[in-house]
Image 1 (cartoon, rainbow, N blue to C red):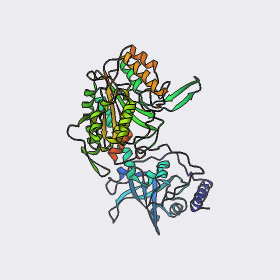
Image 2: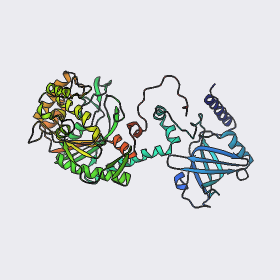
Image 3: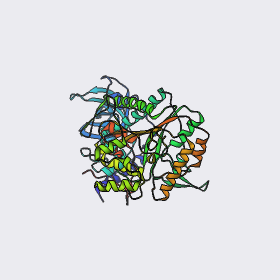
Length: 496
């Protein structure tokens, strides 16, 4: 039997003894007067203070015991003297209480000779008995996979890690407040959809038993938010959980959070100006400065952000002018002639080839905020065609440190043009392009009833949280990322 299993059995025995002695090891409630964070600010001699938290340390000095209670926001020392609580309660503390248990305490605030704010305990209550020990405190969780699988242990052992999830909540709250201050209202759109729509991506497929129909987890809320605009809403937004059945890497996950908004009577230029103000406000509110240190790089969000077309950027970085090649075959030949190796391009149309080329030669070079504009028509099946150059669209992406943070455009509101593009997407899909969109007659029916000029916008929340918290993997910005199940029983993780 391993040491951890032995500890489990010891704690199980304690639980049984408590129940046999009429003690409840799992209480239903405990009334606190302060949180641990609040208690740290209380003046000495403040009495009748009631606190609760997880016991993360316990040290015995004969008739005096010191320990620490902790939650995500606070940590406070407790001091329990035998003469204060009595012999029986002091003995039961040593008999029944283990590190990891949840305790409630009441007492008076003091400051020890070492200067540490402490509650001098006059009574304690065991609120919840734990069966497994915590990882060794000095090492915490060193296995990355275990940190993701058992995030609760990760955050118990690394309170600073929990800060990024408070930052995440603040970012979402700040986004909502900013949008609502500018006339947007929040709506909900379907997660289960009869057609995969809103972005070029491979969908997750499921089956609706009651209706006996195939459904898709939403790729993006776009086409339903635009239905809201057609209905008469002026400005709408949604914090949406989205799903794309594609590859995994540090900057891509299959399920992720995205905020999308749509504003009637705006074009993409209006949207770019609004985006710059919104994101600067977000960065300032989150970090307190427009200068950001990220993974050893300095990112400057101040000033006027540059704008560059995808054509000019590619030409600048590899010397290839995409406008010289009107077909996918010609462009692929030109890419090969320059010894540029692009993966997953076998079935790609011209638009996807341009996107893959940009991601290969240009995107990794971008550090400071850049608006990438005027994407090819065949890469943007839902974006408005540019009036002066029908081969490109009125679209922009905000790229920071090689990550696409925002994707936005003037929306395509011409139902005849939209139908033709859906037909082209269907042809690409039939030719093997899994990302291409299917024909969506229901959305076309909406367009045929009329949609005003409108510009839409989408932000990857997880990527933005990573930028603001100095993380380089999206899983660090998500509390419980999806993991492939392990075989065999789960155990308390090793720590070294």
